[in-house]
Length: 251
Image (cartoon, rainbow, N blue to C red; front, side, top):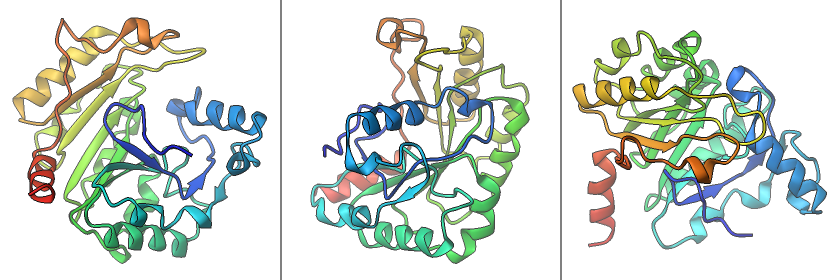
């Protein structure tokens, strides 16, 4: 199986678990669910359970075998802090990330309450980034939770799918505790629209508070057609710690 990713803000994916359950409006048209069911229909053994939460022991040590440094999105097809994943398993995933110090690992969750509960018993080596998906102001509590993870080298927001204007988000961005912001519109069947003014407002706030801004896509039913240009510019900024880490790794 290929681990290279077409997700613009990462290089590879690693899924020691797959499958999930819906917890908020962002989950309504979940791409991972669609893809999992498609792979199940194709007879891919890893997805024999479809989108039912499944642990894959055989995947756990894969990053240790990848000798070339990569930026790795952890559990692109699941949520590492899902309530049904055992704490011991989450600790094992972190142990692999600790050992594979030449990679950068991007962990993204909607289950920030469990993240906060477990954070102190996990080992936060500098190569582990932690992010939260926030689709509307009703889920700003995820940003508050994320800001409690003080030992993470990078705390980032994935405002995708962006479903409304983010009124009040500046109160979190100005703290200096958010190190990166990704924005994207929903794509695929039933995609909900994203307004340009919502994106511009977030971009300007990131500029004001010196936060790297990454615009992933406009989305829609035909995301390749709508593209990822914002007023003629492609925004692909990344945290500065990544540049310093990669330059060190390639010396």
